[in-house]
Image (cartoon, rainbow, N blue to C red):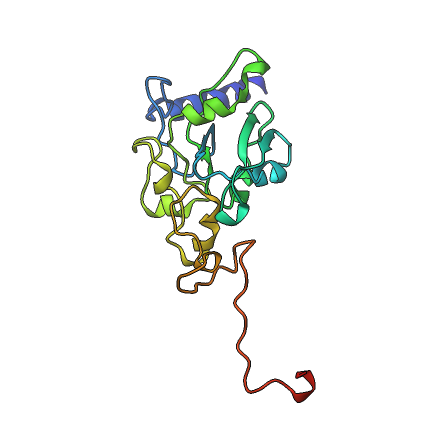
Length: 221
């Protein structure tokens, strides 16, 4: 019995003896990663972030902590909150990507790296300064505009915040209202100027509707 089992084991060894090894000598050699790889080195664009905290609300583990203060200008001008704190505790992160899916302004991306191992749990927190200074090589996960452009996070160049959004998409045009993008103030908030549709602006005054014909006689005094 034991001799047959040993012979079967040796047979498996002999079958694989002539095959080309598929092991990789990491870190000298690296496997090619898919552009949608969900890495731990999150990419965050402060210029696109409004401080809405949608990422923190949708995180099932509650590992994202955001602290904001009110903005200095009117919300009607498309301003955003001031970000005082933006921490991601990656020691509990399961890299599901729900925070990225929840971001309405394409401000948060999954990273493309996996080499941020630490000896202490205290070092497993990505703070706002690390996010600001990190290399901007975003993953294409849930960002079809990057995948359609053929962007490779591993071999490509770092991307600026103007290059990663979906502002050119018709359904996404109005969602850029909260970002730091230069654009004219809606004309219905100004004294003079042609009328435009700015119903998406909180404090805008709707244009009065035109009435057909004279008012009813009962309303005239």
